[in-house]
Each structure stands twice: as C-alpha cells, then as structure tokens.
Image (cartoon, rainbow, N blue to C red; front, side, top):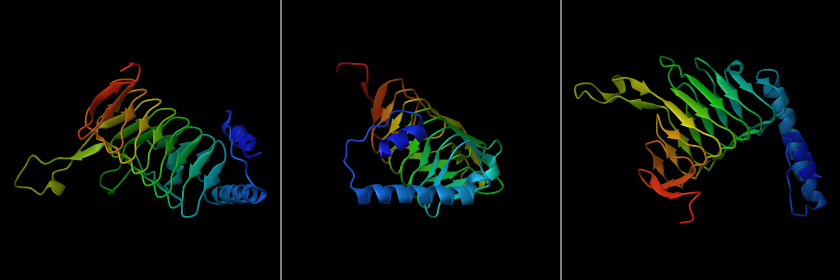
Amino acid sequence: MIAKLISKIKKEDYTIEYKFSTYEYFEILSSKVLEIVRGFIKFKFRVKSNGLVFSKKGATILFKRKVTCGKNLNLGRSSKIMALSNSGVEIGDNFMLGDFAIIECTGVLRAIGDKLTIGHNVAVNHYCFIGVRGEISIGNNVIFGPRVTVLSENHNFDRLDTPIKHQGETRYTTVIEDDVWLGANAIVMPGVRIAMGTIVASGAVVTKDTEPQTIVAGVPAKLIKKRDSEN
C-alpha cells in the first residue's frame, strides 16, 4: 500500500520488501498526512509549487515568493531555505531537504546572493549547507550525504593592512551535474564543477573540477578510480 502510494506520488516504480504491521502503516501514513497539512497551511499558497508540499515541524522558507518548485517538495525538521536572491531559487520535482539542512542565498543584506537551480529527484540529507552567494546549479538525480557543504564564494585576503572581513568577496559559479553522489561530510569549494556520474568520498574536499564517471577522495580530493574501469 505504501509502495503504491509513493510510486503514484513520485511517478516512478517504488518497491518495499519490508512487511509493515498495522500499527506501522498507521504511524507512517498519519505522519505524512500531518506533513501535508502543515505544508499546505505554511507554504502551499506562498510558494510557487506544482504539487504537494510535505513539511516537518520547524521547517522554514524565508522570502517564499522567490521560490519556484515542481511536484513533491519535502522539508525536513527545522530545515531552512533563505531564498532572498537576485534570480531566486528554482527546484524541480521530488526534492527533499533533510532535517536541520540549510539553503542560504543571502547572509548579509549588503551582498544579496545570485541564484540556485536544482533539478529533479534530488535528495539533500540532514545537516547539509548550501551557500548560494554566487550561483549554484545542481542537476538531476543527485544524492547528498549528511553534513555536505557546497559553496560559491571566497573571502579576499590579499591585503595585510586591512582585516579580511573588510576586503570583500569573490563569487563563483559552482556546478553539480546529473547523477552525482556526495558522501557524508564532503565539501565542494567555490567555482568547482562536479561532472556527471562523479562519486565524492566521505570527508573529501573538492577544490578542482572532476572528470565524468569517476570517484574522488581525500583533502584535497584526487582521482582514485574511474567508474567504467575494471580496475
């Protein structure tokens, strides 16, 4: 029953092998109904959405009119989207923002962020941070492990006679292409392009562009394997 319901909502096959008890069915369905009701009341008519909005307790969207999303927006407990930006936030179908995860387009009002674009079927896990000071583009079918950080701005620090906080910032375009898996605690630095099919190992710090269908790991991240290779 649950698998059929999820398949209908996501518009794709969804298989569950676990045999739920009656109590488990009731608890899962009642929690989802509560999330739909909360999303309807808090966000449905304030966010430009084409489908259901599921919202757990404490989820927040600031500057809601800057957000456009497709079907099935899932907001985790105490998650936050700060959408104030020059070109707004565009989110595709079936997007999940995990518990305590943050999307922050603007930190200080003197430096409004640029733009965030997210494709279809993207899952951003718990405690992740996406800092949209420049522009960030995330493709389709992307998986974020917990506590992943994606950045698009660096502080300038060339002068020694001026505090770093007063030297301004340089903004970049950070791109994560389709079918990427970012492992837990990975960091994607400003201006990096994560190529299609890349796997970023847990704890890696990606400081330069990756090649398609590769696995990178380490600090800084380096190529350790090509996914289409037998070795």
